[in-house]
Image (cartoon, rainbow, N blue to C red; front, side, top):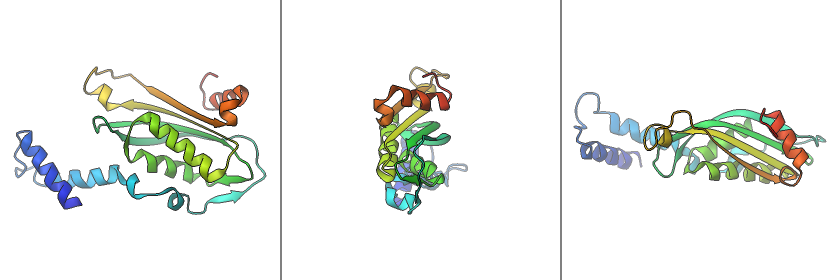
Length: 186
């Protein structure tokens, strides 16, 4: 696949009026192909492999919050980066998830072409699926290069999305607790 992508990037450079063989660009098509494969590596990963059995029995039934998980993704509309932080909460029901798995789940879904709204929902559903939690909340805050470097060119814009499931969706108090813990007004 890398050689096919490399050829495509070579054609893109030519179509832009560049000379792909010139110094500085000679290895760019291959580097760009490798970068794109890395940035979209989430397509070749699955939730079961990412979690890798790191679900542990626990009598914890209070909210667990993991915040400030940085992520990088590509929007499906312009294939430009968007990046920011994920904040994830869940209320365990007999099982807790290994801490690093929240970052791995976030990265797996972030490394696909999509919109932020879908990414937020995918992370929430994945955490709910693997933990069986009674409630899950996910808030993503991101800056989108498609708004910053093209189009309206607004440098300070920040998009916030949230998905609340179970107890975090149905209980205002529980939702407020999550938002307060991550430093957002409830």
